[in-house]
Length: 143
Image (tube, rainbow, N blue to C red):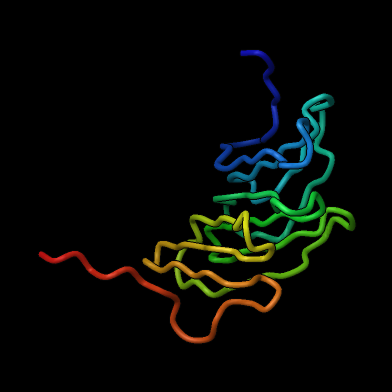
């Protein structure tokens, strides 16, 4: 390998590059923490964000700003973080089972998609919050 960065205690489950910096990455794993790293000085994280109560399943830097990121967890939550202040901006609990995936849209600044073990996908503007009622569920396959 070109470089090995010992970034996590326990199992690492998620990682993303910052779209605005070649040297910043974010990780998440079984230790429940979201950690922001600078790979040039990886002895300790630049920032550790705490709030999830179970393992972090996915992390994503915001594609439109270097001051925000989003994480999902087995605790069913999706969290939006402010990296300038190092704190939680929003916490969504719209899934009934493990929140397994998420992504931010490249073309619409605050459009967030989340998916869960509850067989649902939710797409919403994270500033406004998820839509009321049931999230979208794909049709069942014909047997």
